[in-house]
Length: 152
Image (tube, rainbow, N blue to C red):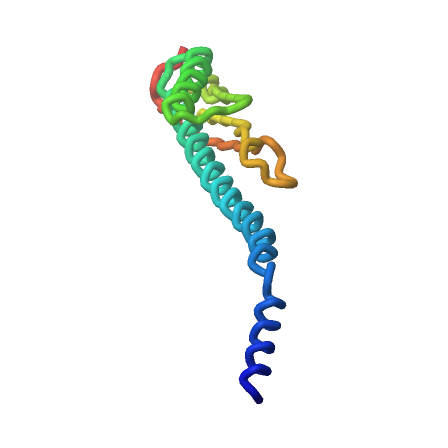
């Protein structure tokens, strides 16, 4: 093979590869962006789950130490709301349910107060195709009511 032949074959190989970096970037950059957005989504949802779990446990505990059923419901809802606010979780809608039927149980009977916290977290700012704009996260926690404590 002569020097001239080698030079032309090298040039033709270079010419054939022109534009391949642009094509790779056009495919790779959006895929990488989607991958990063999915990681951010996973982290945001997991942090929200932990916050909602903590709010449910705090609501159940706060409700279980009250003396009356109405005070238990008020205290539980207040504890859950303040827990979500303290953790900085921005819910588009929040639903807090306190089941304080344990206060109707006779003395000496073990019973539990149950708190359920539901929070819709906005994830529309991530702009992931096919992903709904909100994720609903629900947590339930129970706390025992003292079996021999006076109830009103």
